[in-house]
Amino acid sequence: MGCPLEVYFPTSEKVTHLIMAGFHGAELDGTVVLSRALRAFDSISNGMAIILTMNPDGVLLGSRANANGADLNRNFPTANWQAEPVSYRWTLDDPERVTIRTGSKPGSEPETQSLIKLIDELQSTIVVSLHGPLACIDDPTETSLGKTLTTHTTITSDRHRVSHTRLLRLLGGRA
Image (cartoon, rainbow, N blue to C red; front, side, top):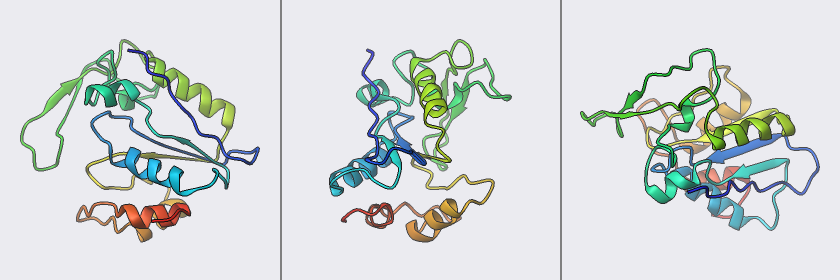
């Protein structure tokens, strides 16, 4: 399909935060929140670069995978990359598991290659990737941003959903 990857850059020169959503085309919550935030601002400021959807083909297909059938979240060249397909459940309560490919090799997918190149060019200090529907914040180093998001979005260990209004206010937009 080859839909373009669109990046919205800040008005300032230095990008300090890269915020993205839509790694999985069937998880639209983050894309909706970022879209609303973009419309709430006159311009992007505070050093934030924003990608509404990392997987535009997957969004059009309504699929977790990209057009090549790969899970982009599992395609990065990391120490724990595996060639074997992975399985997941759409929700924690869903008994059915779906199997999906990780790509032909680490970093094989065009979306992954583009994001790696962008991260290398921007050298931002914070990267935020919004996913759904499990409503958790994965912040192993307990950053101040992670703590702020936890405080202002009502995400707790009992899996409360993100309040879009609160997240918009946190990002500085109108609800």
